[in-house]
Amino acid sequence: MLGPMPTRDRLLALLVAVVWGLNFPAIHLSLEHFPPFFLVFLRFALIAVPTLLLVPRPDVPLRWLLGYGFGFGVLQFVFLYAAMDAGMPTGLASLVLQSSAPFTVVLAGLLLHERLSGRQLAGIAIAVAGLGGIAVHRAGLDGGATLLPVVLTLCGGLGWALGNLCNRQARPTRPFRLTLWVTVVPPLPMLAASLVVEGPARIGASFTGLGSREGVLALAGLAFTVVVGTLVGSGIWTALMSRHPSGVVAPFSMLVPVVGTSSAWLLFGEATPPVELACGALVVAGVLLGSRLPRPAARNPDDAAAVGTAGSRA
Image (tube, rainbow, N blue to C red; front, side, top):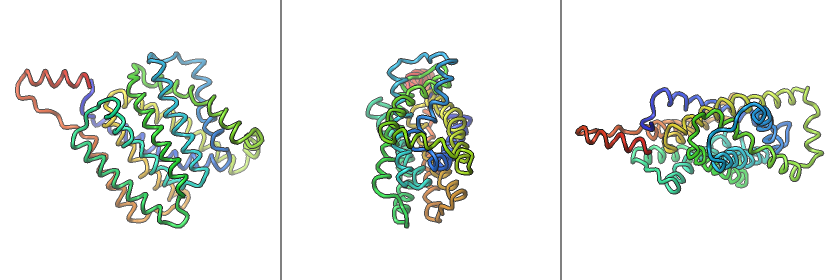
């Protein structure tokens, strides 16, 4: 039954935010060695092959499986990896990609007719204000992202939002099985895109020097994104999206840039000025506010029954 998000699920959503925030430094390390489109292919193919051989297909309509895989797996990462390869700073990438949260909430309202409370809208507005403040500050720094990488990352956020809606509509009885099968969708289109855009020569060159420090770090980053980011993070996210409305779960993704910018500062020396820390606090406040759904007060048994029926349809 869908309802207010319990503490356990909030903690799981926070765990996903931490995992996905650490994904950005891992991606950065992998992009130092592998071309972006081929890296997306590797990320998903490593899971897709054993999934096809060992895991039964989830009991969801094919259109939602394909839509989730194409939005979350292809559109999100083809634009994100291309943006980071084009010079998008790691911390800023983790920030701008969280445009997926307001995209998800707006699209869910328009396409799925999910009703949003004033509390949720206020939380989204506060979090977006925090994200906007960080973006404006980062845009004014020396070496800040140019317009093209920012636009590419926003396109990735829109792709993630479309994947969220398909995930929501799929409503799998076994969410982790859907998470695994989503990885079956991206490999072939990403391999084709890599061959056309990056070429066989660049792909082949990426397999040399894997024993060097750069190569080992690239493989470590790839392993993190595959095992922790995709299997653990996406598995938990899929389960949460199947249990709660999109507008309740999606705002937690806004916590990802807090982790992303902090880890980028620790690992790569990307400074996080006080103004960004203050804006990050706004993001946290907005997420916490937007994720709280007030419990309707039932005045009599008939009202209570009506509330329960409405909740079961949400």
